[in-house]
Image (tube, rainbow, N blue to C red; front, side, top):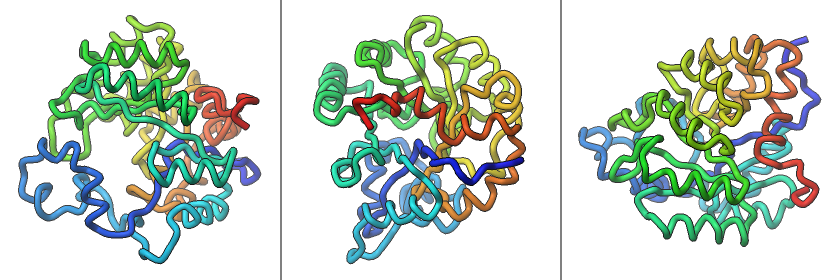
Length: 295
C-alpha cells in the first residue's frame, strides 16, 4: 500500500519563518560562544548551514508568519503542528485552536529558574513537552549530567515528555554531551520519564534501537532528517519491534522544505501498519495531544 494520503499528519517540529537574516542569526546566540571556526562565527546564517541547502525560513516582512505556516500545513495535510513557546507559537495556538501545541525549552544551567519556568509554561500555555539541546547548552551539559536530573523530575511531575538531542551534533561543537549511551542511565534512573530522542542519534542508531526496545519510555522523532536519509536502523526498528516508538518530525522551515519532505516520504520502506503510527497515532499518544481537554 505504501504511504497513505488520508491521514491528518502530526508534525512534531513545526517552526515559523524569520522576516530578516538578523532575526534568524539572533536565534542561535544562546550557543554562539561554543563556536570557534571562522565559518560558523562569521559566514553562516545558522550554525549547521554546511549540512543544508536552500533553507526556506525567511519571508517578506509583509507576510504573516503564522498564516504562512498554516497555508503550508494545509497544503501537505498536516493537521497538527507542535511548535516552540514563542510569540508566533502562542498566537498560532490562540488563533487556530486544536492545530498547534506548544513546547518549552529547559536549560540545565539555569537551575531553579528553569523549573519555575516549566511550571509557569504548563500552567499558562499547557505545554506538551520541553526540549533540551545538550551540546548547545553553555557550558555544555550531558544527557546524563546531574544538572539534568531536576528537569527530568519536573517532567515526570508535570506529566510531559522531554525531547532531547542524541548523536553527533550538527553545529561545529563537541558531541560528547549527546552520546546515545547516556540515555541508558537516565532511563534506568527515571522509569516513569518519557524521553524522545531528536536529531538522529547517529552514528549510534543501532544502540538507539536497542535502548528503545529495552526502555518503555524512550522514543524517537525524525527531526532534521530528510526522509531519504532516515537511518536504516530506525526504519528496521519501526518495521519490527518499534512501530509504537518512531514519530514524524519535519523540521520545517528550520532546515527542510515540506516539498522535499513529502516528495521523498513515499519512498521510505515502512510496512503498511507503521505509517498511521508514524504519521499520527504515536505522537497523539506520547504527547497527550488526543486528550479531551486539549482538543
